[in-house]
Amino acid sequence: MIFRIVQKETISMLRDGRYKWTAGLLVVLLSGALIAGWQHFEKIESQRSYAQQTDREMWVGQGEKNQHSAAHFGVYAFKPTSPLSALDQGVLQYTGVSVFMEAHSVQDATYRPADDATAVQRLGNLTASLTLQVLLPLLIILLTFGTFSGEREQGTLRQLLSLGVSRWVLTLGKGLGVTAPLLLMLIPATLIGIAAVALSTNDGSVLWDGGRILMMVATYILYFSIYIIISLLVSALAASSRQALVILLGFWMFISFIGPRLVTDAADSKYPVPTASTFSAAIQEDMDALPSWTKRTETVQVRLMEEHKVDSVAAIPASVAGHTLLEAERDETEVYRKHFEALGDVHHQQEQFTQKAAFLSPVLAVQLASMGFAGSDYLHHRHFAKAAETYRYDFVQTLNQDLVDAQASWDYEVGQEMWEKIPPFSYELPAVGEVLSHYVPSLVVLIVWNIALLLVAPVVIANMKIG
Image 1 (tube, one colour):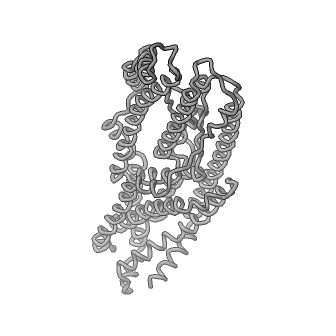
Image 2: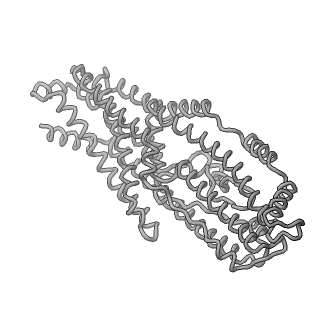
């Protein structure tokens, strides 16, 4: 019996003009978003590859100079982009794509794509993730709001139940009957999207990153099932199809637009991010508390004279400049890292608060988890920034240590052989397990929503209006 109900619902849905038009429009939007995301990924990766190669050539070919001058010449770390970001660009538009690394300074990532956006682009981009998170639920509502209420208005619901079909079998059959047409639309679109992204990578490596793809698919299944179940329940309880549609559209507007704004405003209020001027002033205050260059140099000279048992600065058989630079870089880096870590913790607290508050609006849970598995979230940006900072400190201290090893002063110069000893910056995305553990609260929200709705379902079905 249940198979016949599923078959009947699926055929009716496929023949319904609403499905043909809305599904067709959604496929066009989803395809367009995927193509745009694919082109954006290829453009960004091409620019990153060229910039990275050019920067390396400039570093190696900078000519002979003192190590500390080279440390201020600096190098760039360019953030690689995950192929899955073509599906969900997350916060990539608002986080920088490169970090300039030099001595005595830790800098935030710069060159945010949003800075170069045109006036039209600032109105918002159509992405595959936006289509799936906001527009597809609208399609589910439009296809399901009359599932029970429509049959009740036509008088066929009473006839079905009079044939001995249980309410549970009828509900399950209608649920599966609604899901089947959606899968007929989403599965080909998903396969085409993955194939397109795989083709955009030279080695098709995205196909081997199956864990991220599977987690992203599972996240969206949990999200869509919320809309399917709640649409069926509202249709079962509503007095008419019109009332069911109004209720569901109100739910969709709150979940998609009002709820996220309330939660993000609350997160910003509970964990305020310091302004740029406040952040810079706090760093400068701690930097001013460090010993001046003259004082630090005198301290190093006294210590080296005692270690080498000499009675004059000129007799010190070591690089005063090198030792001073090593200590200064260590202390200054500690100050910068303390403030950047605190700033990152504020962003992390906001994100964790948002994940937990997503019970109010599950679209937040799917947004956060989706951009996380796509590698376009703040977690990945912070992971990259930390890797760049570790590289910066190591490369600057390598140059300072070379000055110490050579027992050299400021007029000592080295050339290409030294520059080639500094390896180019390389970066690997965090493992899928780390990403999964970070987004457990979001996944729990989606699972709890499904469980809660399934627990409510027996009560709703038992009290479903028949006629």
